[in-house]
Length: 174
Image 1 (cartoon, helix red, strand yellow):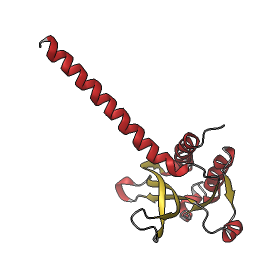
Image 2 (cartoon, helix red, strand yellow; image 1 turned 90 degrees about the horizontal axis):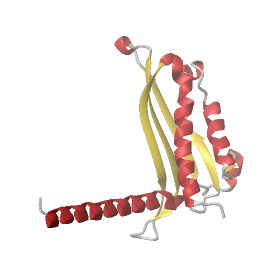
Image 3 (cartoon, helix red, strand yellow; image 1 turned 180 degrees about the horizontal axis):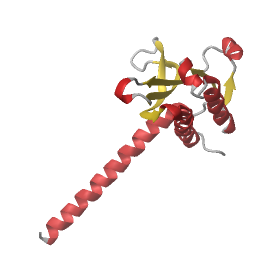
């Protein structure tokens, strides 16, 4: 390879690195932008199956984990009664679906977790249209042993921590 070809290749790699880095910054900005100025939320959680609760994981416990983490960074969490008075407040929706397997996979539970910030938005293409939309999202899938279902609390808190990391990036302390 000649010296000029090597220099061209190095410049090409540098340009691609800069473009890739700029693209990552744009994607990050788009991800955190909806969290700017957020100060109050409501938390919703799908009910958990009775078998899951019997295995040591309750919806109340998960809700407490989520709400505590939000409050620690200064996000106010509305009660259901308060939400009735302010129904347009953004909602953090936690969906944890757990399926216990039978047959050869008995003793294994698969799970799907999603955490969304849902709020009323106005469409850019028509400002007369408003809709409820997820403005921030994370999800995960996995499996645990039936006796370890309680450990899924850490999956939920990890998802909340992802949210809070973006929230803190969007709302730096002054």
